[in-house]
Image 1 (cartoon, one colour):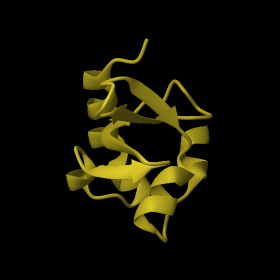
Image 2: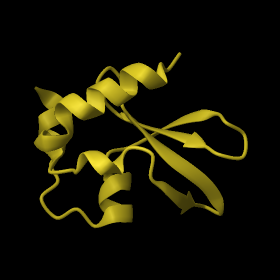
Image 3: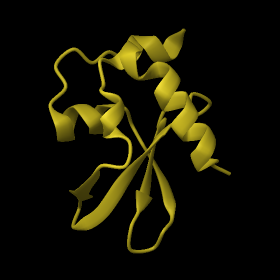
Amino acid sequence: MIDPQQAKIQFEKNASNYNLALDLLGKEFTIKNELYQFVGFSRRIRKNPVIMKNLKTQELHKFPMNIIQTIYKVEAFSNEVLKT
């Protein structure tokens, strides 16, 4: 089970490694006509470490790291940090 508080803590600790601003936490955006809110990271889930909450169902979902790059156009993004 995904712990949203732990996901937030992991994001706060690792955001600078991904060149991401801390204000990304809580931002809302649309994926496939569903509204999601960014919750954080889970370093335990290497393949899909990005944790998002579906605001309609309140369910937590896992996404790959490149979802952030796709949505926010982060240029200096690197998946290599996850392998450490």
